Amino acid sequence: MTRFDLHAMQSTLRVDNRTIAYYPVHALSPHLATPLERLPATVKILLENVLRHAAGGLFSADDIATLAAWQPGLTLRPDFPCLPSRVLLQDFTGVPVVVDLATMRDAVAQLGGDPRRVNPVIPADLVIDHSVQVDIFGMPGAFGRNVAYEYQRNRERYLLLRWAQQAFANLRVVPPGTGIVHQVNLEYLAQVVSVQTAAGLELAYPDTLVGTDSHTTMVNGMGVLGWGVGGIEAEAVLLGEPTYLTVPEVVGVRLTGRLREGVTATDLVLTVTQLLRTIGVVAKFVEFYGPSVQALALPDRATIANMAPEYGATAALFPIDTETLTYLRLTGRPEAHVRVVEAYARAQGLFHTPTEMEPVFDQVAELDLSTVETSLAGPRRPQDRVPLPQTSRSFRAAFAEQLTPSAGKTATATAVAERPPVVQVQIDGQAATLTHGAVAIAAITSCTNTSNPEVMVAAGSRIGSGDILSGACWPHALP
Image (cartoon, rainbow, N blue to C red; front, side, top):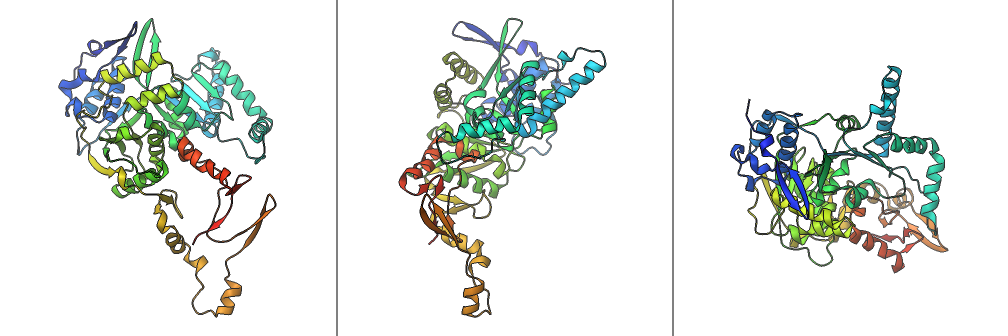
């Protein structure tokens, strides 16, 4: 068995007038296969997790040694335990978790025990964001009326959730109408660095999580390592059972250059997705670095991280840096906490600066941001990218059967039998004709878009341009 003096590895930070304990990863430097300053941030965060829980007796010294052996190109990648600091639930999977916890309490009570002992061990947040339907639209007060209908339809569910919020420790419920789960996580729940107080001691550690939605990775944009899992795995973590990972294969994406004027985060994320699907990053961790990381605003980073499921990565981490601190302040996090985040990240070697030594990775991809061009997704799959000038050609190639007359038919027969269907639409007294190739906006709901206010404003600005009437985009046929 590998020997470590785990308790001697704990150190302290002084932030303002507070003494905050933490487990410095640099204490493991003599045992690392890769120099600490060259380790990817992903590996550092996972190392801290194993070190801290080994010191608490949950993991073993051998678990530390397993991950400390990380270096690029490993042939053997054994498993090691990881216990994230919190669990993020949305309603489709979160409500069954509450039912399971309530059932456990019933079982304990029937056996003569104290049902109040059944609680999440790991803090969990349940965000109700998938349930609200659109019954009312295109008029003032529509949003509030839709939320009211949701409470009426699912009254029993909300009675259960209200009871659960009051009955269970370590469980918070965010009600419907607050926002998409990932945006709530990004703007409110995520702390970047968590601080736990026990027996009068404050202990700091990286904010990590698993969530019951594949796009949990949006929060990677602010330096928080988290990824999506199934409901059973999330519930196991919630009850204090570690999840097991293989020693990660980490792909670095080195960013250079700057985005050109008019190019959006959507254009960038489609380019990144195309690049990484070509490389192949399924079940791997992606990490962004390089001189142009700081050229991306945090919402742009969140958009890229959010699409990790589309390029197949487990997570897509951006570093903690000055932009992260700016975003924490912008979204109302206390200044005292922002100072803790900075002090901790610098002490752990997790704070990115342009002059730092670049990490090493299992594989590296390069992207010059100045080469990103305006694009569209599709036309068949959202992860595909089509440069804007090629939209018409791509659309016609993808739907050739619907748009091209079959060989052997006369012009008259074709004109009658295969004329593209035409639909007449009336919107606020104005008429329009829809057929194959018409472009319309029905709603702006994708979490890829809602991660980024700039993209939302750009889409919403069309409302005032005369191209959108009552929430539907005035149709334009492709050339």
